[in-house]
Image (cartoon, rainbow over the protein chains, first blue to last red):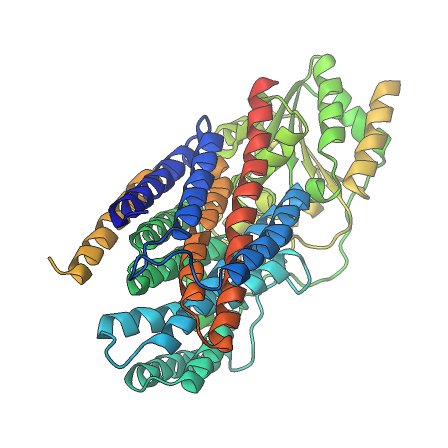
Length: 463
Length: 95
């Protein structure tokens, strides 16, 4: 393959990536956009095997190793992506982002070892940047994965002297970076990699559960920038374009997500540096709540004119999306006006709940976004909260300083009756007590969301 | 224009394209868009293949092989998982 043809194919792949991101920004073209992106990646990977080397030498060295490694990656990646449950999608994205960051860091370490004394300052800088940021992205993503998978606490982890620790860590990263840029040496570079890995962990630990998606998006943008820096060192234009696209669009997306959740981007990202102890978990004293039977719930629903269902992550965990649709169909058949109030971050990530309910064939027109559904709660007879908590918690409006303060919520407290389907009195993902549970117009139905809904459905049928 | 300046120009222009293409996205699509962008940066696979091909010591080769495995998981898994999410959206429109 001639150099010009190679570069032209690379350019085509870059255009495909731009079209992919453009397509993914609109619901109609999203799936095609993703397919174009995959095509771009395929083209880019195929042509590198025909890379016109210095003496026009073909094929690549170590070809067997390379193909074997790709095969291993495919054998791990495809089944993981195919088998992951829809509810576990966010942590899967975090994990994929982490391995991407790890790959970029490894590539940069090899580049670094190969850098001769003739290497330009810019090349050395780009290499060291990739090692640092790639490692941060890798370890940070692993921590977000552990948080989302609930393999560790979802609450902010505030270490003793955490603030001193992270500043010391940052200073060490910068100092050692300067060192490895002046004197090329493999051992200092490995120390730098270790320090950067530690920084990623310290950076993400203090982030509360509700803010984790924003951090994943940010780390995603970071990984994009490392790919661009690698492209600079390897003089691979395509990597520069693809990496920069992801870095730039990821930054915008991070800001959009923070806006949708009413979060301060600055507060989220620099929580690690300020380490404000965020405590609004309540006093933990026993207070009376009103719990009801499935029959009570069925009667409340049966005599309502308008019901708004607020689905949350609990619904997803219990796989209750089909049962909830069955109940909604039953209510619609009785002439009751039924809508689903979808919070932008219901579930674990923006848009996550839409995906889950679409899977259960809930009619599109019944899914109402927060801005549209909020003014209707005053005319709503029953708000049925299924496994959601933080997204309806009035503390977001009333308790300055609590982790979700400022997040827009669904105003279910304005409806005539509120029903919570909950597993227990345990607070939600953000770990904050919900005053609404003690409201006199609230009825609680304890138990697994699917089991409870099934009982409500049979009670409704016998009415 | 030197090689380095040309690369810098490409980098700068790509920033603006990146900002522009995603400036207006409904929150419904945030997750798939993040996931798709995530898959695109898996193209570091190309970089990993290039360094693997130039590796001469077993340390270099070992590290670059590990990079290829991780990058392949990122790019292949990323596109497959995004497609699965978007498949759900398509089903919604039909019903």
